[in-house]
Length: 72
Image (cartoon, rainbow, N blue to C red; front, side, top):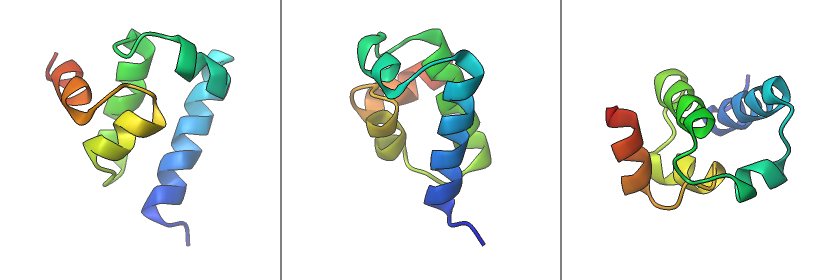
């Protein structure tokens, strides 16, 4: 059985593959990149990972950036 964190990592890797991205793309793209926001929204909807975790994993700065982006 996969843990919540394992599931979240798997979802991120799926999203990266879907876009043809690498980890380097997460580093180089803007913190508020639209695709990053979509990935963050999927993580929030399908996992229990915190905004802090999502911000760090997607290289989106701090949790406040993620929260503001997800508000719309």
